[in-house]
Length: 103
Image (cartoon, rainbow, N blue to C red; front, side, top):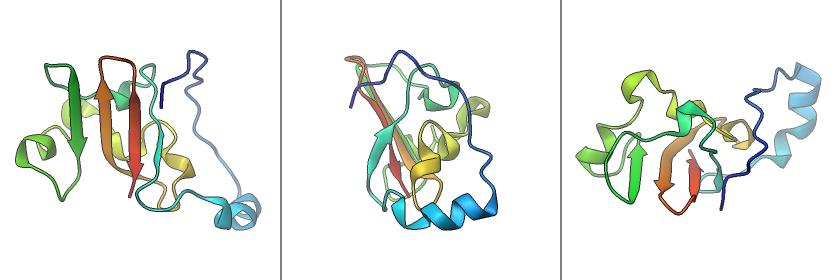
């Protein structure tokens, strides 16, 4: 997955009708969705060629990066399209690959 250059920092403000109508069209747990570099919440604070931050079920060093420096990793990027509405993990690579994994 490679982040697009035309990112719009907009979170949906869907009403109840739209949410009910599209609730079966969401991405299930474990799906990787876009988390573009233009979204500050998609950035992972670390040094190296790849970085990961996660909420739980991973190493302590990755958990320590979760929600660090005021970032909201859970609600970053395309997390709105997850059935849960949140990411459980955000991954970044120097090659431009950036994604979040649905919780």
